[in-house]
Length: 144
Image 1 (cartoon, one colour):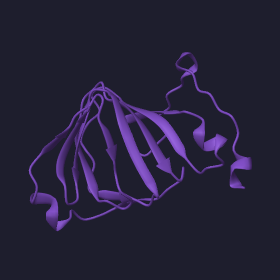
Image 2: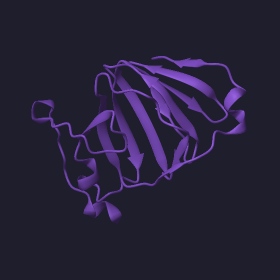
Image 3: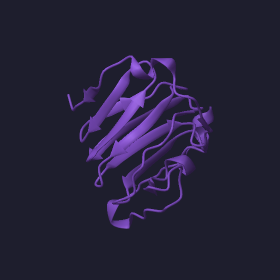
Image 4: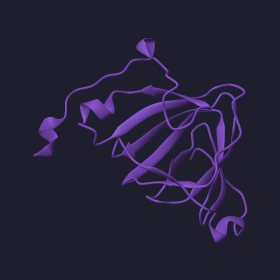
């Protein structure tokens, strides 16, 4: 079985190190050790905003099998293909289906979230805005 390659992992807040490596320069990333523990099958990290670093991101998509994030603090606003604007606040959990086009519109200075992807390494492709980008009204994702 493929599970034999997996190993135990524990990551503690007292030992946390946030680094400026990652997809976006306005965020800092804390690796939770899951990629190493799963042989690259899964990525789990904490992402937090660098205060004052905003601007949003253009339309893009990720080549993943699974992607979700859970907001710990603050808020983030995305526009999703076929959905419209979604504001995810502390307690919100968002699943982004594989390949969905999306654009980050804004986030709070205190944003902190956990993101999980399968696999750990994946490609991000810049795209054009989908035709549906103007079709939907804003929606708020709140803790349920």
